[in-house]
Amino acid sequence: MRRCQRDGRGLQPAGSPARGPRQIVVLLGIDGSGKTTTATALAGAAREAGRPVIVLRNRSGRRWLARASARCGLEVPVRWADRFETGVRILNVLTSQARAWPREGLVVIDRHLVCQLVLRRGRGLPPGRWLPWLACRSLRPHTVVVLDVPAEIAQQRILRRGEDHESLDYLRTARTAYLELASNWGWSVVDATATTEVLVARIMDAADL
Image 1 (tube, rainbow, N blue to C red):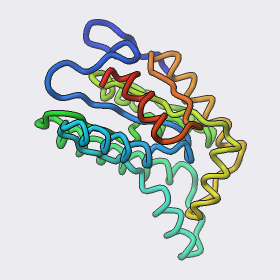
Image 2 (cartoon, rainbow, N blue to C red):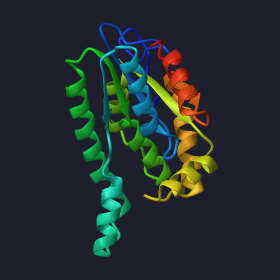
Image 3 (cartoon, one colour):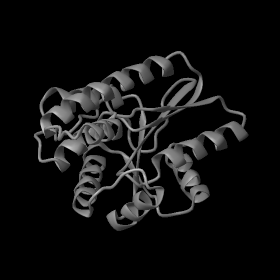
């Protein structure tokens, strides 16, 4: 995966807030890292502080595709699944960007295009050329935080919610990918094994909220 250059127009240093009245915080991490729960809690903390806030989620349609293929008794080829999910993710990210643009206050984004790059690595697919570029471009004005948990803990959380399943090998590969991207692109990494209250406080500190 290509390194995102950080110049005057590039990614801000980890922890620096977006300029102007609008601040966008993007939460990334492996399945089971608590992105959705944390996004909701972070928004709640912002509201309690009297700050306008909205939570936007950029899903890929991966679970829907898995359920649909299982009902039909079909096994979707990996590359086809990736094309479908990439298209859905891009559409959702573009929609989120449009919704976030005119707003003031805090915008919390749960998942982004980077998630598809991590999926590709876990599936043994090449990252491609345009998706890494688009992922880097679309994250430039934002503060990005990676929620980090060991793969074993993430798998336990996934099994408890009972909606899907991820192998330990995939979760380990995905975690490594997120940590490498965080190091290369200058993102904040927070320990997501803490309580939600502690985790929200750490994110607010990292994002200077």
